[in-house]
Amino acid sequence: MQEMQPVLCRVRFLVVSFVMILLVTASSPTYANVNDARMLQDRAIARIDRYIDHFRRTSDQQALRDELTQAARELERSIELFRAGSARADAARSMVKLGDIQRYLSDWDSAIRIYEQAAREELY
Image (cartoon, rainbow, N blue to C red; front, side, top):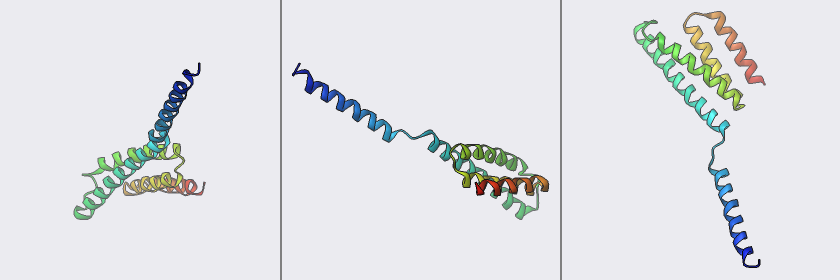
């Protein structure tokens, strides 16, 4: 029995060490969701910026309209992910950008509603 104790101690040490390594290196789902949301938000903002730049150079509002539609989808998804990760300020920023898209599309009522939601999101 005495011979087994050092072996058991080593096994316990290895198991505890392995679990600790897993806990330290495994990324939490919330962190991954927030990172995914930031990636979506950044991509959407880049699309919006391309649209604005194109409009300023050409006065053409139609050519890159699909870019705004895709940006809106990405922002909506980012809002869901930010909320799931309790990143309310980031969700509010996505909402403001979503409101901007509605404004660029001359949907003023939707833009105002989204801006108001963004303000409430930021307050909570």
